[in-house]
Image (cartoon, rainbow, N blue to C red; front, top):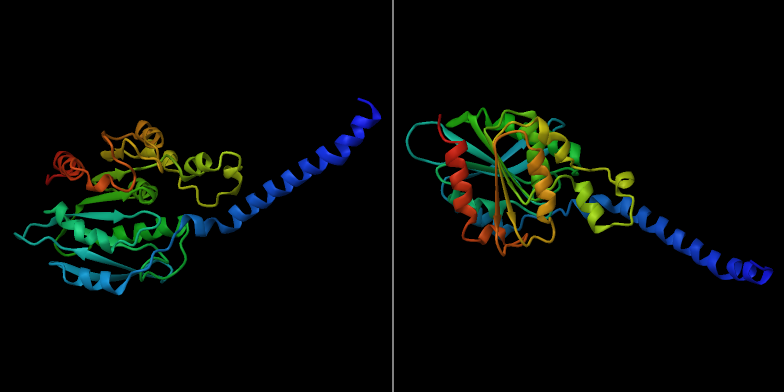
Length: 284
């Protein structure tokens, strides 16, 4: 390399490298500082949705206190019928989901009772969300549910959708749930984020990894993993990794032509869930 080439490098290439590095560091800093806003898309509860749920049969509005006193708000649909204690499904929603809409779908799960609480900072639930607080709140909700009149504490099922599977899996690892329904689950939020930001050191930046893969080998609860074959937000390969690591009895169902946001309206969705519950969470 002659002196002229060296001068060209100093004047053009090195400044470009420096600018590129500065941009990279800036992007990483923004992602680190704003990750809570990117992960926890706190959805509000609109008055119309609250009024609509109030009109549903056998449904009551619930507020309970988390371990730190934070108010958690949700609903309970109590299946009516004979005097036998019923099983209860605990629902954990997506990262942009306000769960009142699920109460309208709870009738699809009859004869099961159904409870859904909004995460901290979502709907009317107070506080700020984090992985640790959401998992701790899930344990509080589970413990509350086992003391409900008319509920069989041995028949609690966790139902997680997308982001909510990260909470449901950790609850299944911590508490004796009867079964787990996991819709569009991931192995970890870290791997999903890395796939969307391939040039960012996600492992160094992410404060809320939701590492379901780390918990799956210790969970012997029966699990249904239900995925959309055309899911682009959580591609099935991420669900497959969790499925392969799951220690308990498991069932994999992939619904053709279903994407992330329309999976629940596909004809095979509810029949698959009912068949799984009848096989693995029936009265014993």
